[in-house]
Amino acid sequence: MREAITQSELVTFSRCEERHNLRYNRLLVPFKEHPALRMGSAFHAGLEHQSVEAALDALRGPDPMWSIFEGPSAVVREATVAAMVGGALRRWADWPDMHEVGFSLPLRNPKTGRASRRHTFQGVIDGVWTGSEVVLGEWKTAAQVSNEYLQRLEIDFQVSAYMWAASQLFKKPVRRMVYRVAKKPTIRQRKTEELEEYTERLTNDYIERPEHYFFETIVERTDEQLNDWAAQAWATHQRILQIRNGGTAIRSTQSCLNRGRCPYFDLCVGAVTKDAFRVLEQRHTELKENNNELTS
Image (cartoon, rainbow, N blue to C red; front, side, top):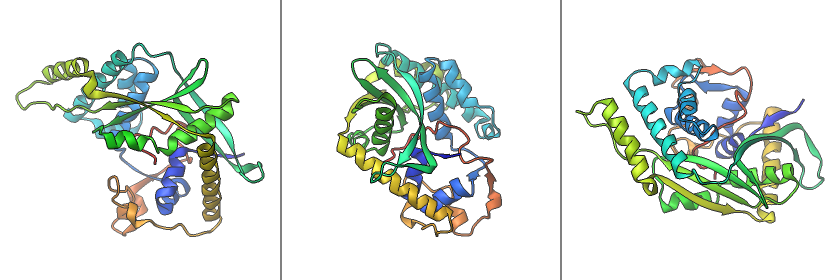
């Protein structure tokens, strides 16, 4: 039986082989999930189901990691997610209907065309529109949405990965992806403000200033770019197998504090042991890995 490999896993490996080894081979994950990841997943759920309630259910979650969302901060996060999803549904109400599509496809040797006997490439595309052409959609949340941020979307590896997958699924060229980006609140609860008042003010802010909070951009790819991604994915897959079979994972110290502190930093420097992490029962606890940071 082939194992699944996801775009998130490929990106993790490209940033640091040792981080990949700890997460996907040794199956170590932090006991507590970062709040931004849960909020991003909740936002996705709200758009997928066209429902604020679905977003809040995803935010609260059934697993033990919910402990980090208890107390006053949890209530504020609920208000934030509700305002973001409600505003997004209004902002994009006139969009053509898109549906979520999961996939599991063989990784192929670019030289021989043979499929890997060990891995399939697996994931979930946030939105697919199948009209006169197949167009993909991806939703992201961000603290700041600058011109630089939108430009980085142009080189996001996830674009090529999902276009390649969709081209295989639908047996036709897929060359366009629409990104919808929601910015997190730029207003905060005042010291003298009750939560109900803040929630109302936040909700109204998203409704009254949609151009401040919601952004769209279209990214395109050529056949050559998709083929380049497929070749790179195959090479990464081969290196992953090499490490799995006894090779040494290289630690990239440049990635330790890049885009935030690596969750395995203390383990790598010997400040904690593996007991500071929980061990997963399987490599992927869920098919959909909502990756809100850029994957380029």
